[in-house]
Image (cartoon, rainbow, N blue to C red):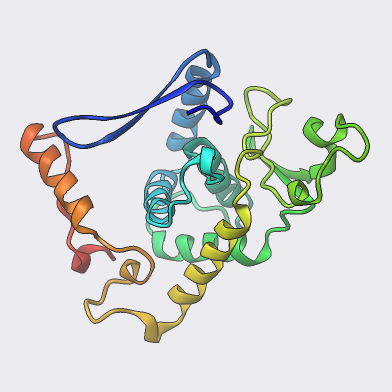
Length: 232
């Protein structure tokens, strides 16, 4: 991918049809992995929320950074920031439905993308976006007006790096979150199957086929077929 910040090769596993991204010359990946593992232990709700949101974004083609979408690390930081600043803070995953609705509300309605940045290290904080080196060190007049609306996430490994700077389609992403929030709180939008999640994501034939291939080729790996009626 020529437009990516670091060299990336995209591939598809022949047997399972699983998409794979391989990046080079990026030593911060191992450090990021260590941070995410710690966050998964600290916030039990993090993993299921990120998985649902990744699927939600993928179905709208908003999950690829080189296309302006949100990558996995940036999305993880967004969810962590949401959990850190929710009052009361959530320590269990027993209210995932409520958390998903509130996440959509926060980033679809309430979060100020123009002025606020995200930093998740320690207990986390929201900061004045203009203070981030990406904007503070830019020559006067070099920051475009459209860039001011972009997502700003300070990299826990490198304070100089803005993890969200590549997500130039944040306007579309915000609109998708807002529409999802409205769909989730509108009780008349629930499908006949009774699945609340089915109001914002669909269990496509492609996804079902992918799961079947993984379960067939690698039995016991935890790959499960989830019907719409069970997506609650």
